[in-house]
Image (cartoon, rainbow, N blue to C red; front, side):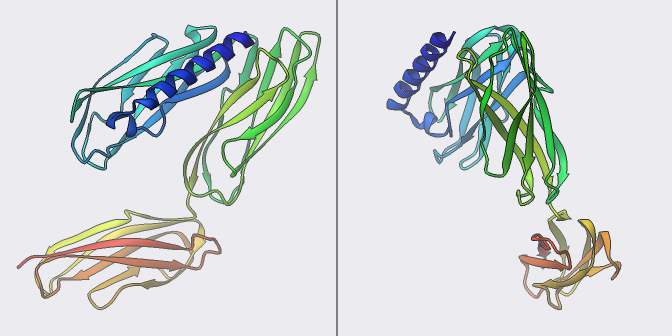
Length: 330
């Protein structure tokens, strides 16, 4: 099996190198053309997005996507890209459809600005003698600064010599450890603990924890990790349009300012007599309703202003920006 894996990896490297040697405008739009999921238990679905950015300066059209194996499905999130726009080819690998090493090609066909085809590769080593429960480190939605932890259990079947010798993460914001919990005649159990650093930026994160073992047939195990970190302070919406207004006419919009704990609004920077923000309360609250008021200027057209709302939160994110567009008509 180890020989087979090395052979498969070598073939993949040769194919990728060959493709790169004759790279086209279509190839240049992809951040990457291959994804190795590593050794995985049979059962869970594996997913990966191949990102695309239209750098051609012309309209790009993805006309078709096909795969070399029914164990993989792939779709484009957007088929038509204007210059500068981005999308992804979402690949999904069904590990119940194969055992052992599997290498699958995804063919992405473009019809504009010219006829071209890009080949993507996904591969994995599906094992029946390995179980990860649950199949991922899913943190869900957490508050920024919380520093949460999650665990999964890894079980090796059929031997008592398997050991996890190293644990690595794809991000410096993640810390992971492995602890052996049981070793029997034909079964070895580990608990994998992953912790997210409190200073991890807000947003949706997709990463992997990689386990290195001393088992030559299972050299590396991938455990996917997902988390959505909420900012300490958010404004919704973060951009408003007031108008159309006539000269000296007033208009207003409501926005909602949310925090992870009660806070007061100290001030708003960037306003003046023609643009102001007023809160419904001076007290500390987790949610404030703000009224943004604008006055039409002397000239017709759009005026874009950025306001900075400052709070008393003792967090790194104690300020938030609000973009206001005022539309003035003759």
